[in-house]
Image (cartoon, rainbow, N blue to C red; front, side, top):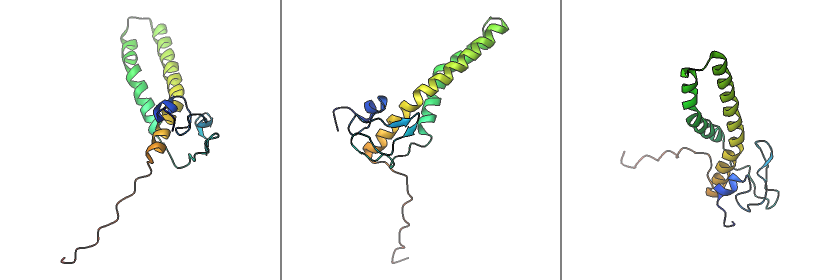
Length: 129
């Protein structure tokens, strides 16, 4: 691995191993392997993690405006325009940040070898029981 961390490579949407290959072949469509170093990326599955983190972060940033606009002394037309503008900003932020969050989580999963959780096998009964 180069001097860059999986997080920095995820921000750049590059392979966490070589730092050069692109993670995605299209918007959120993950490459099966790194086009440069060949690292298999099918082992990691970010599921809904990136969407949760992005949605939660954008909500924290925009919630004050969602509360203040309806209470502002603006006319109804300006309030509607402000809410439409906020909806566009929220949508744009989510669409922009989603590939970045997915790249970071994917690189961290591959770097740490994280996999799906499996239940522990049941313990055998003790001989004296």
